Amino acid sequence: MEAGIVGLPNVGKSTLFNALTSTQGAQAANYPFCTIEPNEGIVSVPDDRLGRITKFIPPQKVIPAILKLVDIAGIVKGASEGQGLGNKFLSHIRQVDAILQVVRCFNDPDVIHVTGNVDPLSDIETIEMELMLADIQALEIALPKAQKAGRTGDKEAKLRVAAIEACLAHLTKELPLRSLKLAAPEAEAIQSFGLMTAKPILFVANVDESDLLGQGPMVQRVREFATKISAGIVPVCAKLESEIAELEEPDRSEMLAGVGLKEPALAALAREAYRTLGLQSYFTAGEKEVRAWTIPVGATAPQAAGVIHSDFEKGFIRVEVYSLEDLEKYGSEKELRAAGRLRVEGKNYIMQDGDICHFLFN
Image (cartoon, rainbow, N blue to C red; front, side, top):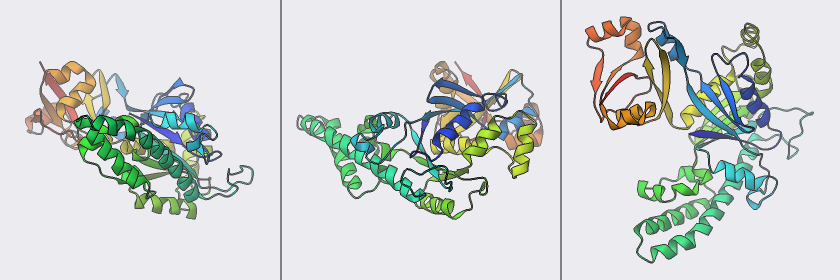
């Protein structure tokens, strides 16, 4: 699962991505980042529950959950028609699972906005419209082929035709596909299309140092819009974050305290991106390591075991589960077991965020 960082030119997208990249230095012990390609990277998801677990189960190492981010080529108006790096942008964004849209929410005469006027909602509308136009093009190309196959009696092709027609009708009303609810079979029939407006979205409001908490009018407008479409929003000062990321401890902590932040805003961004992707974590804990494992919300216990190793899913017998709150209350797994707070769950158990697990498999 991966998220793509998108935005118009001069909104701070590259500064934000570079800030994430530079955390591989002094901060590597806690929030590692390694570059895969020039425009891709893996960043850890800060989670204070890991530290809380290690107070009771000291490990040799701690391994956080990770998130893959892709810095996607900038978009300009007309990208759906190939303007700028439009074709490259679109090919990359089709491959990601969620969109992190960086929206400029600051004024700076030295940084010219591509339209000449800083208007975050206009920026959002520009990108959304380009993605809708590109989705319409992809669906219109796919429809004749699906109709031809459907006339031969191909049931899947008939489902695809119905899904394509429903999507086109929705898009022509200038509505993104994430607001369209398709039946599961129809959604699966067009899943391979990589339709961009069907992907969940998180808005990253790039603010200046006078509005680190995102309380200014421009951010409020984005927040209201995000609430209306059930999307998340994280205020981040990309310029400040890039400066913080370059510092060693304790200079980093001192700078954070100086600006009134408990942690880098990038930590909150990583967690919110994780949530936007529909992901959650469960933990395994022992002397060797305390580790966060990534699973989709709604995963069953065997599916969660399969994240560790495919053989664990195939040979799944049961899972022993307890909560962090109970660990903190009773102090050890031995006391948890004695108090009857270590549950045994079977194949149909739906994993909960924060479960601490021991899997038993054949």
